[in-house]
Length: 535
Image 1: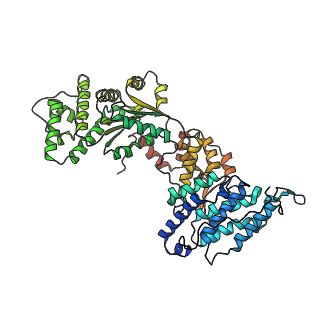
Image 2: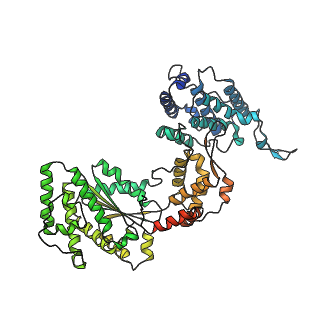
Image 3: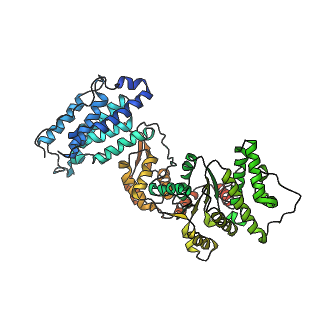
């Protein structure tokens, strides 16, 4: 116990150093700038005594809260400074031993005194944050101050009160980095998942390194493997920014079980899109003639055969219709693979940047497409402008060891490709996802994330679906009570809730409540492929 009373923390700013609350009420844009500057100032210039290891940690957390109160209320005549003096006096009494705050039991009612605090004790920190809110201070910042002031209660403090300075720094940094999400409460009370990647920093770094090695000829691309719904496709989409930075192009293809009956259709559509891109991008007449000559030289009279798969090919070159070309049959598959490879070589040569070929759900690829992929890899070994990115469910290959896909998967291990095995999210990764979705600080969502991680086994898609179920069934709700507007949840009921550990069972649970006509329509649409156009 400290023998000396807590001294009021020194005021960090003098009058006029920053615009006060009068200007905060006049301009929202200026308000955002002032609050961000103030947060960054406190983060960088906290008094050494507050952040040192001297004294009680909760006392120092409380003192930091007082710094924030004085920072945003100092010099404003509408703010009652008696409230600050009152909690300072309580702090001095606590530190000098006049007030003993130990969780004892009332012998009369047999109720912990922690549950019998007076309304004044319970409301002092909320009263401070409420007054700051009236001055135009953003509600999340009011909550941060309230959770710091609450530390004066010692063992009686609420669960949301700060426990470490690391959490304070993390919250301040989030406010600075993403003010629209964590500082200014302009978000709507709806669950909206972000397009961010959570807990995948190491995997993204591997893709970046492989992409850089492409130009040296050391690496042809990356294979991302993992279970269903673990985030392979989302991780693969991170290549978009890299490609954009290098003036490159990303060609996408996605296999499904229905299209397996149409050999080469996925890759053919992707190459056809590439022909269209070149036809629209190349504007110089001389460049068009050079490109057409290169294609005619590479493809020869067999270009007409390839045009059956690539309807946009005639936009790049003139086809000779006087000669007969072979029809697509088993004897011409090798010729077709060679034509695709030559087309890629020519177009990559004239491309202003790298060409990335992204193929998703390769486990559903037809045998002809797998052979073509192997041919494209083999012919691109010396091509430093082509980068391959494959997503595949390796567990499907393992369950069918004698399948064509598994044989192909084993054969490409000899290729210069980097392999990334994607596992489920860690508890920290789930917490980052939940925090970002609910627009709440990670320290507040950590208990909920811990339960979700256990129930969803870290599967990001399952975590998201579970959040939607919790909201729909009322266990997760948006509260408008008090000075804060934020997501709340019933932790006890969520912990006891029984949820399937299988994503499919969870989806079936949601689909069972749909109208019968809608379910019948979905059954019919599912027979038409992964994507259906509703006209």
